[in-house]
Amino acid sequence: MLGISKRGNTYLRTQLVNRARAALKHCENKTGPVSVRARQLKERINYTNTTVALANKMTCMAWEMLRDQENYKFKSAIK
Image (cartoon, rainbow, N blue to C red; front, top):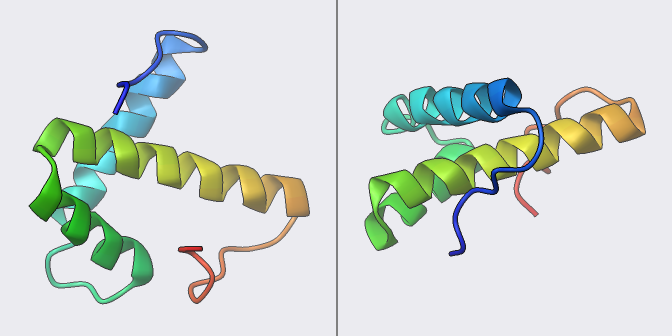
């Protein structure tokens, strides 16, 4: 992994990583596709890289929802 870029809005980037960190804390007992993926990543790579990867995934999901003007779809969260 190359790490998180320093480009873009610092506040937004910080908030995304903080939200990913919170989601990572609460994914242990969940069965959703994002939680399963987060647990798999946590087993393979360190906590910081897992947090950044999850923040990236959450950002991509948010962008797709805004672009397509759709609500969150549980089944298609992980492609």
